[in-house]
Amino acid sequence: MWLVGAGPGEPGLLTLLALHALRFADVVVYDALVDPRILDLAGPTAQRIHAGKRGGKPSPSQPDISDRLVRLAREGNRVLRLKGGDPFVFGRGGEEALALVAAGVPFRVVPGISAGIGGLAYAGIPVTHRDSNSAVTFVTGHNTNGEVPDGLDWHALATGSPVLVFYMALKHLGQIRGHLLEAGRPAQEPVAIVSKASTPEQRVLETTLGDCLRDAEGSGIEPPALLVVGEVVRLRAGLDWLGALTQGIALNPDPLGVKRQQKAG
Ligand code: SAH
Image (cartoon, rainbow, N blue to C red; front, top):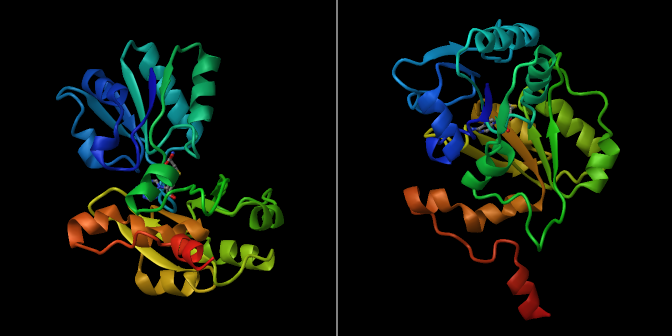
């Protein structure tokens, strides 16, 4: 059994091991987030099983998925469990792997490019930048019940982490925004919402913490999406390489105004 990350969408972001697994798997058990162009890389005889989890719609429960993986492996299939992004980043890969351990099924793990890093790179947003932040925090906007996790220390997040990257953030954007503002994060702080990163439907909404809920609702931006809070969002003015290549957008070599300040000082 191989537990493999498929990256954020663009098939070119697969690892060589992921491609190898796709070519040789007898059965591919994939999540809703896995891009159809990636599934097309599976061998012609591979059985494809959708084990999607998508907010709101009926989907197999986690124990059902784990049981199925165990059964398929015990039947002697080469099973590829394919997950969006990285299997161990908000992907329940750890839970599935522990079920394999409990059942005595040997497995290997192939990491993938997580949306919160590689997807943001497609939006021209580096998660760290020397002139802006030396720490970044990845947060999930959902717990297993689909609610904002209640174990989060919002004050610590708001005051301690210069950049916050939220996965699964759209549904509870209002609550997340409210918690951060209440804990002292400035309303004018730059925010980006990055939807369907690295796919042909990628969309990026640049706004502020104060305005993000209104702007997101008005824009019709859809999941899967990431929410980024922090100064790094400004770097997009210089680093939207995809916009520069596809729409001829002019890039600003000093988006944070650092060189301007140095000259003035
Ligand atoms: N294991 C995955 C995350 C799974 S949680 C990873 O490492 O990327 C699902 C969430 O990931 C989505 O709600 C969204 O916030 C984010 N996500 C996954 N793919 C994305 C994409 N192409 N664009 C934007 N967000 C994405």
